[in-house]
Length: 194
Image (tube, rainbow, N blue to C red; front, side):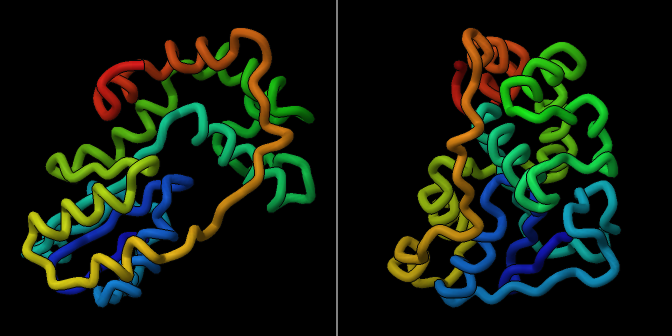
């Protein structure tokens, strides 16, 4: 769900992009967060009325597609006893006993899906898009830009949170390059290319 952070920020929590760490790191830095009641965990700006956004700077997070796919698949496997559930919107496409098989299905049936998915979160954030790979740096820059009072030291010292292991999430021959090409829009827009 969206989260208020202090009196200046509004975080749209993009799944599997570091939002859990960001919320707790912000709190440790002196900027407590509060959930917006009545909204699902990953609501986008299009789902939140303007009255709740007033006076706050919206931001969201993105992540490189190759690690997002690993994180998402691993999370679903852990959450559901090492098997995908079929309640996920694309479960039939993703449902596979191995990561390599899941990626092949993704590449065949859903190329570019993640870039479109990220757009749902990014479109309401007026350019305030932080990258999971350099989240502490991006978050500090955003907080300075909005004039927030916070402890940079505490934020940077906050330990990783909600981190998975990806030993069984290895790409097969040629798959990583194919994922990068399929999600080229995300790489161009947030990472300066592949």
